Image 1 (cartoon, helix red, strand yellow):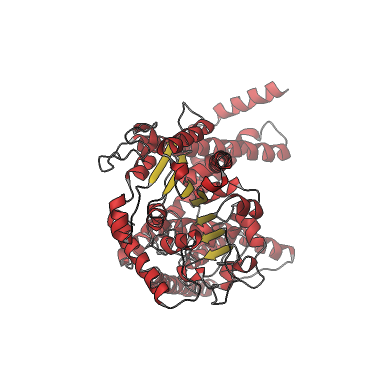
Image 2: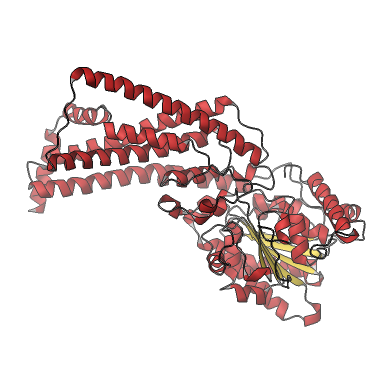
Length: 591
């Protein structure tokens, strides 16, 4: 029976002429816009021009408007269908005279044009306000014009794709109708349409886009830049006597071990004797597992004598293995070079791709490296162990915190930690925010009166709460979570699709416009579009954590002046930090 049905379907497929198939597709694609859908898309487009966290480039405008209009058109179409069906069920019918109908169309068109112009101009002005809040030069008018035009064009393209999908469904119904009962025709045509769309999307996105992104990431990881010289110090991985070859470190690793200050520059900036810092790095490859990569890092720590330094810091990198130079250098200057930093590259894919394709690797990297180093430290005499700190930024913060089951274990296992730009889906961060003091701001929750953990949006939050209140005395070990109110990586969450977050309800961020509002679906895409360029924002805003890393690490290391002090000690500390910041900027000008 099934074979006969399939043979009949194939015969029908051959029977439907090519001209008929083209006609079905043309009818679906060229049909006039639905009135409810058009109104819904217009309203969504007006809302999409509202402000988000960061200034928009042209393609950010395009993404916001396109996704918003798609949502608005679908919502408006469904609402129109519901209203029409309800009206018919209640026996309601609205009749408008032809001359009045024409007049109503003109008035409606004028109103739509007026509201669209007003919302667009208001959106452009809000973008200038956001630029000033994050200390950036406002974008020119052409950026907004091109982005808006691109958004409208993209939404029409999406509408065409949706109608092509409808045409496919109609085609399958016409194909199956002569051979199957009506109820089965609808269900089977829906399944066939879904399968067709799935295959097309899979081939376009996973089969082409993702593969191309992976190929580009692999090529970038292999690229040896002439602007990144091989280190000459034996205290760097990839340098003389290193067990890790220069080529094996990957692009991010080569840049890390090549950067930073030497002993002379540290002495010049601090005015005190210094040592040559140790930087250890190893990269995972197809020939060695993550466990083998961790063993390679331990071998480098042994070779360089890192266990004899005062401070040892374990970094978990982002997807590509990248580490923030400001954080690395801050440690080296503040400790006078009497430190060692270690990290591994668990992937060479960008963080978004790593998160989608393999979320376990960053967690395994953070856990395995910490456990291996911790075991080695416990084997040393207690008085001869370096102080152990952990750190990570963005996906590195997510992975690094996976080394601990809960907060007590973190406080027992390390002498301090600095987590910057922590994503909201990080399990340990979710535990911490659940313990926050009621009434404390969502952007800077107060945990146990700040005895061990402090959430910092700017350096002054190290000594006072976000509202200016006093913490309890800061005890060791110390943990800092640094997160800017304007950092979309911190605040992005799938629940933005349907729920307003508390941080937006409070509107407390000092570098976020109070005009920002939450809208279902739209806010999700606004913040998603903010993320890709959030690291390119001026330091101290967005996902750029720069100068503030110096006072943050000083506090975690226990080098800060007495809380509230305003005498020569605090003044000298600020001068020392300023000299260190100037020195870091001289070797890392792009920061």
